[in-house]
Image (cartoon, rainbow over all chains, first blue to last red; front, side):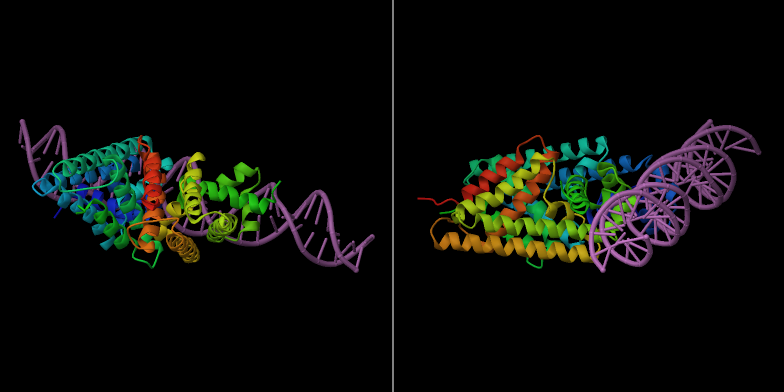
Length: 186
Length: 186
DNA sequence: AAATATACTTACTTATTAGTAAGTAAGTGC
DNA sequence: GCACTTACTTACTAATAAGTAAGTATATTT
């Protein structure tokens, strides 16, 4: 049983990734938790503060994950990273970067900054993991690690979106392709 | 000088791709055109009808483009397709598929259908162009045409989004990588 | 037992939203 | 010159948004 404050963040996160930041309201959260609108304002002064907390929670979860993954091979770490995206689609959600990034221009400044920081964090980790994998001969790819990182994050972000639009298995196709791209070819 | 009806579609299109469907209002359009709110309702019964018209206009533009491109080589056609995405970033816009797909669950049903149809249209064209290119030996890639198509559309959709979030040149990286992926290797 | 903090509810405000009904002014057809 | 259409405006409604001020019940501290 989570404290209300954390429950609010969890539900806001699901709403953002399901409907988008500009399509959910305090009323959506309140009704799901059987509390009143104003109770959310007790925990979060404004929607911007709540939005920032949602991004922060995602960052913390990502950092915990990467720590847990560190005992695996570089290839497996990247595969787990890709699986993290796939898991979103089970809850009919896209990733927070796609949900918030697509509305970037409408976000309050504090959320924009937190989102950019989150992107940096993810990118730094992925580039380092790819570089390490290449050095350890666990991974191979025919481009720079920066380019491979952008290809992976872009591919996964968008295929979650397109999987809702299309009847085709875009997510599966992209996932398979990206894993093949980093596989060792002998 | 466009008729008002077309001006409304053009401005709605820019607003959708800049702010998202749920973040723009009739007031935004009205103020830019120096007309009243209700004048938009004269041309479009509802926001859903306007939204659908915006997608239809994009579909028509795409079909016109592909017709114009047909005299070029397959490789050049795909390169022009990729450039079409890049051009969006000049107006601080993302592509309509990214802007609307990320809010897919909140869209009225008629818009969802039109968006899915648009995705089919784009995908069919791109798969065929890739297949033709492979047969004509103008293009080469190490996966199925369906997979390459999904990789290209996903990569371009997301890198437009991430270019706003990140200080890195995600769009340039992905664009370069994708073009390299379809280049003939000898 | 009194004071204080925590976690809310009740009741409200102000702003904005899509949408509508009725009216108008300028043209077009006959 | 009269009917009708086109392209609006004026003035409005009902719903929903985020946010606030004041009050309340329960637990904790002193």
